[in-house]
Image (cartoon, rainbow, N blue to C red):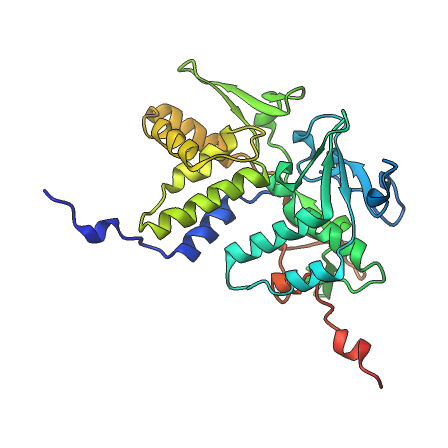
Length: 318
């Protein structure tokens, strides 16, 4: 029986598909240093004048810090006017544009330095560290307050706001079922299945996810619907890669399509366990001293992250 051409048309639009893909693959998790007491944070001492505006801290203190080589340093600086101007143009209704504007901010304000003094770009960062770093840049940029906050209500009835600051972030903890499979030398999980297959898995880098997102856009431009299961699973198997070509993606897709049912089911289950990152926000209630939790949100949308909500009143001449 011949195929109906309509069967090949996208069942959801590109924007919906990108949001679903990025939502499912976004992971953001471990303890964060406080800038106010400068613990774990110091001005970069590379000796280069251009680096004096950067502050450095150990990558292990980032949400996905356990996946970086030992000794890796993250260098971060405050956003400059031109970067804030560019970011302010983000389209809150366009998920792809939001991610790209965040990536542009990271590209300008973040570097990664390895123990051998090699310096990498934001593309080497784990995808789940994006939100953490964006709010870190915001803290450095607006050090005189001007915090963003999410509404929350305690069980005692006290209505409150929880600032979107790193000290209020709660993170997913590694499931006990995964701990024994983590290779602390190569910073990845190593799984051997009953079929004899060995899979090495780790959260993907920003650069790799960028390649896959661009592939999605290309597929939609060609009126094709990408394989969601493939896009969900395969980036986790390309450990430490920060890019992949379209040809490389198609090769991986061909390999994925001939997986046995058992191996597919295992990989799908393993990736579902890869919950690393920001889980929610937490604060102690001022009235009853109980912990209050609420969802991690973007008050007023992503475009407001680097906007001052009181700018008009603050800067208008009275």
